[in-house]
Length: 119
Image (cartoon, rainbow, N blue to C red; front, top):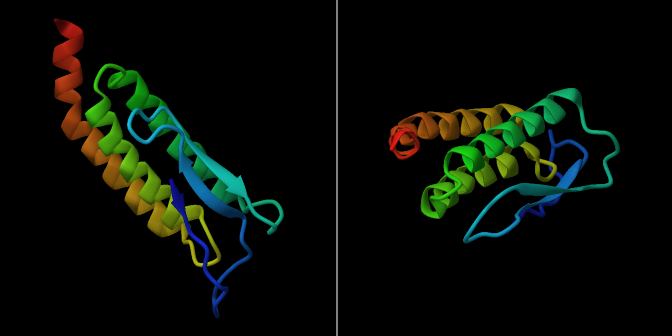
């Protein structure tokens, strides 16, 4: 589980999300976020959150029987969630870059899933 609590600094924004949690660290299936006091998150944050969830669903579907690969990819999703959404200094652009790295890793890991499915 990842928790980020930071004091607001110049250039920071309201806290829309306070915490990101991987549901089961050893056998992850989803990431949850805890809403903060900042009101309704901006659209770009919501789109990033939707993209993180879509990628998490793909990871679970492709690696349903490979907890180690799933755990590794969810660690990256946790970083994307934390850097893009959690706390007053989060940046959607940073979270998006981290998510793109997870997607790249997913592409690299896909042959293992494909081979398992074809056999």
